[in-house]
Length: 114
Image (cartoon, rainbow, N blue to C red; front, side):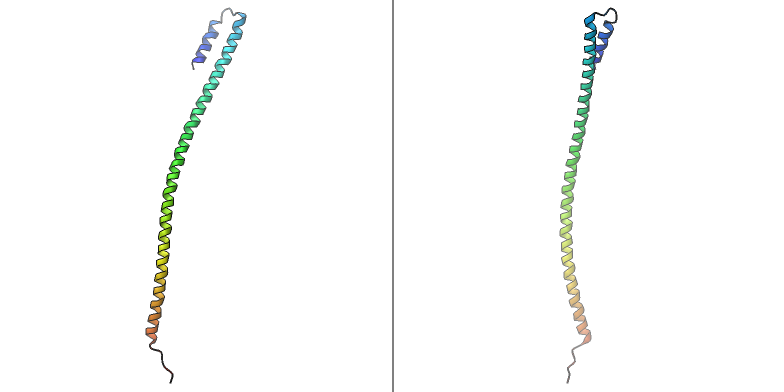
């Protein structure tokens, strides 16, 4: 904050006898220093905000990578579930056929009516 130091030097230098134009100059310098301080503060705030945006952008990229990985995992899981469902239906059909065959064997040959 170099501007604040310059303002202090101007104010102390004019502490003795003050010429009429010096007060206006001192007042203008104080306003200039306040304006520069305000500008510096605004720049600092903006830089902090931009740094925060950089962190946010990195987080969004990480989330995008995670989303892609999760989507691939979900696709694989859905494919496996479909395969298991198909296999389950096939096994169920085979069990039904086997039970019918066993029932027919246990019942023996159909009796003929005479």
